[in-house]
Length: 399
Image 1: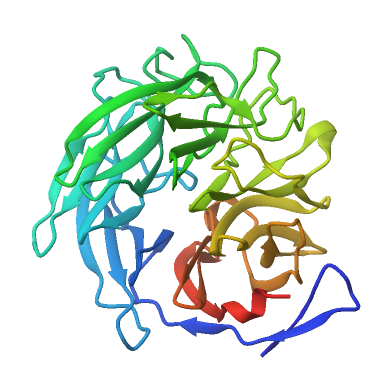
Image 2: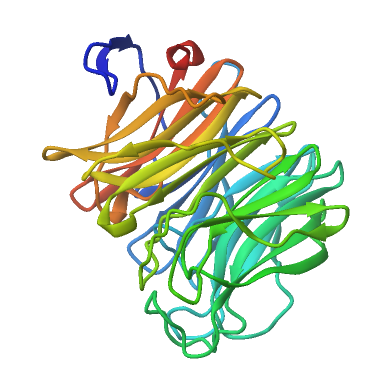
C-alpha cells in the first residue's frame, strides 16, 4: 500500500498499486498500451548493442499476466525516437502496428510502415506504406484507432512540403510540417488519405478518437505568429471541419516542445489533455466535450513549476475519466494520475511511480479495461531501460 496525497493536503488516500511482472527482455523501452473491448495489448521496442531494433507485443492472459512476447518486426534501418514510437491497435481480431523506416541517410528522413496480423494468422504482413508520397522527408507521430468494422483510422505528421534534410524544431528548409489522416482497411490497404492542416507544430504527437459522429484528430497547431496551441478537426458528413483551437492558451514558442495532446471518446463525449506554458507558466490542462468535440468545457488546470506534461487520458464511462501526467517535486519526478468528471471536478492526484525526468523515460501510458486502470512506463537505471506495468482498481479514481 502507498500513502498518496491529493492536491489538497487534507485528503490523504491509501491505494494498492499492483505491479504486473513484465517479460524480461534486455533494454526494453517505449511501451504503448491499447485496450480493446476484452483484451489489453502492449507493444515495445528493444535495441541491441548494434543497430538492430525489434518491435514486440504481448497481451494480458486470464491470470492477469503478460503472455510470452511475440516479435512483430526487426530492422537495422529504423528511426527510433523517445517521443515518436511504434504503437499497436486491434479491430475485429486484426492487429495493426507501425514502425518508422529510414528513407535516406539524412537524420530526419523516414517513412511510416504498417504491420498487419490478420485474425488467426501467425505471419505479419510487413512494411506496408501508409503515405503515398515518395519525398525523402519526415513522416511520423502516428495515432491509430479502430474505425469501422472493416477499417482503422490513422493520423500523422507529414513533412512532404518541408524539403527534408534537417530538423531544428523551429523551421524546415522548405515549407512547414502538415498533418494528414487516412482510413486503412483490415489488410493494411489505404482507402483514402487527406490533408487536415497545412501548418502544424513539427514534432508533437497527434491523437485520434472516434465519436458517434465520426473521427476527431487533435494536435499542436502552429500559427504564423508561432502560437502553438492545441487544435481539433472533425470529420462530419464526409468533410473535415476547419481546425479550431480547443482553448486559446496563447503559448508563443519558436520551437516544438515535443509534448503532444491526447484524446479519447465514448459516444459523443470526449476527454482531452495537453501541456502548455504561456509566458513561461507550466500547465497541464484537461477538458471534456459532450458534443463530439464541437465545444469544450472550461479546462481543469494543474499549474506547477515542476510540470513536465507527457499526458495521457482514458474514460471509465462517458462521464468519468482518468488522466495522467509527469511532474517534478523537489528532487524527484513522478507519474501522477487522477480521476476527473465532466463537470470539471478532479479527485486526489495519486503518485503511481517515480520516473526519470529525461527523455529516456519516454511517454507513460494509461488504459482502462474491466474495472482496472493500467499503467506502463519506462524505468531508467543508469544506461539500462526496462518497461514496468501496474494496475489500480478504478474505484481509486472515483470521488
